[in-house]
Image 1 (tube, rainbow, N blue to C red):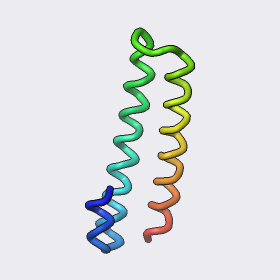
Image 2: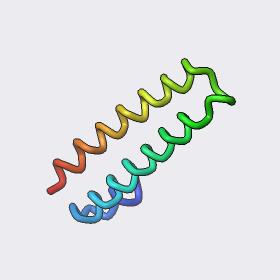
Image 3: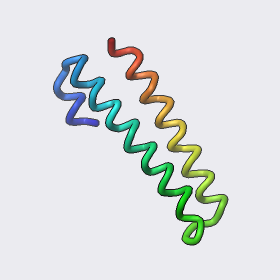
Image 4: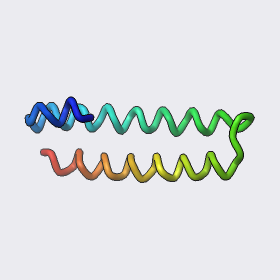
Length: 65
């Protein structure tokens, strides 16, 4: 995400924010599939954090028109 931010172009920054949002979604899916390795509480906490990150990125994407 930092690499995209340094470009200073709205179109490019928006692209990197979208990529970051997608990566957070992929991580969320991985945690949901790792129930054998992590406790349900750990998975739920991490998924909540990833949901917050995705919401922040969605907000940033909407602002960079």
